[in-house]
Length: 255
Image 1: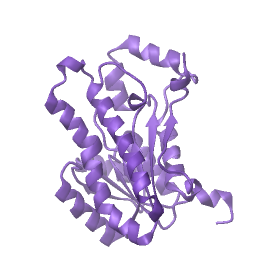
Image 2: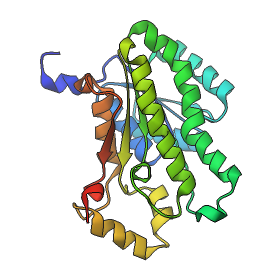
Image 3: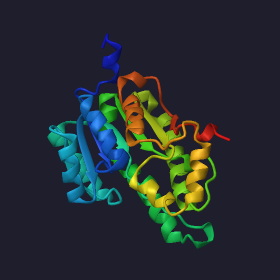
């Protein structure tokens, strides 16, 4: 790879993206595919997967799988490996949100978000690691959140789960770095997705507060996050691990 542009290519790499049918996950899938990657998206709803595959284009494939089912996760990774080759990039993007006061958030709701953002990704990591270690290469990416970086009211379950994911990133990066496997996270700011609109459309005061703190004075796009993910998945970031890349338009820097 003498050309610097080639450092951002994913030719010959199989990338598995959870929650790849909509929003940020779909944008990541499109960016990876355009960069030459063999993209596999997974999700729970077949119709969403089929629609996304038509957008991504030829060469992409889909898997219907609930990341909370560890046996189904292992079976999916086996299928993908046999069909598309060993997984070189894993993007733990699947997520869910909960906007609720702390005292009204039940233990089962807290556990549900923890399962989606931490337990399911852990099962996927366990499934892909043996092959990555054998080949001495791999990139694992978590989509975290600004809620893991500073306090946002009414999202205690979401914040706890996304914060825990950052702990996984730091520990895992240290544990498997000697095998040339990199582990990183992206903390998107407020991105124009259905999940964000569910959180802010009924709360105009919060929406205005977000924009007033955002240096670029706009919400981000899924593509803004997708190109950050492409960087972390590609050889361009070969010396980057254990970090969280903030893609927030300056929210964390705002006043």
